[in-house]
Image (tube, rainbow, N blue to C red; front, side):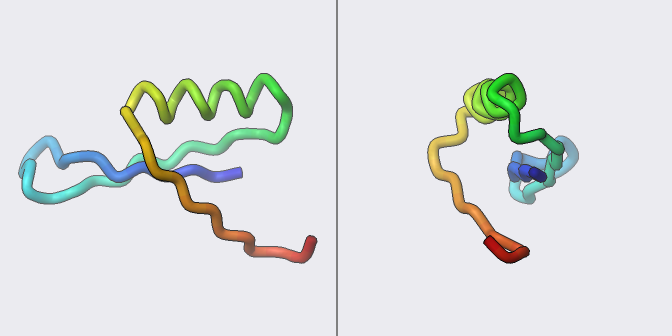
Length: 53
C-alpha cells in the first residue's frame, strides 16, 4: 500500500510538502508503517480503496 503524509515545507513553512512511501501487507510492514506515522506525529488517517474487495 502507498502512504502519504503532508509535512511543513523546508523552504516555506506556510506551505506543505508530501512524503510518500510504499508498505506491504505483512505484519512487519504494517508495524513499519505505524512506526513511520508515529515518527511524524500523525494522529489522523484516511483510507482510499482503489479496487474491488
